[in-house]
Image (cartoon, rainbow, N blue to C red; front, side, top):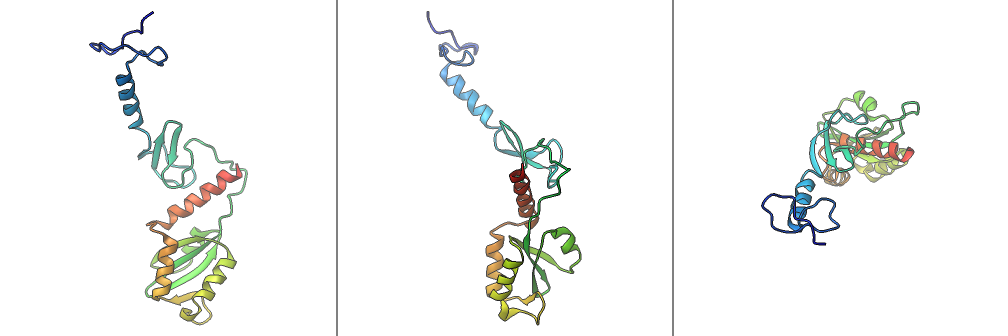
Length: 183
């Protein structure tokens, strides 16, 4: 028995017997390329991410992922459980000073502190915060959590930020990862 002909009109080639669709090798490859062109594409989510509120998502064959926190679109969050605790060390700039502090609730905490810019978040708790205070003790303003800007402090903050333009996106991802680990 001979192989069936390719279903594409005017194609003289034969389709492979084990092909899922009666297409020749060339048309199968063209179909795969076309289908793959929609994978990994950033676009608007069907609805905002329930974890971080972002509207941007990445489309994959298995479904949408939030482009910010990578939560799988459509996966429920168990609202009976408390939100996961994600401790961060934050770096805030106000004029020529930088505050190094820590919190498990950055939106609430930072809303209470006068600042010009959120520079970076670093995963960590009071222990990491104390290490940073000791590391930059020479720049510390009295006994506060505020520090004079210096080349060393600027370099450290840039390394912590690691090219991330929006620290809140990084925090949203950490929260999403903590939710995913929890199940």
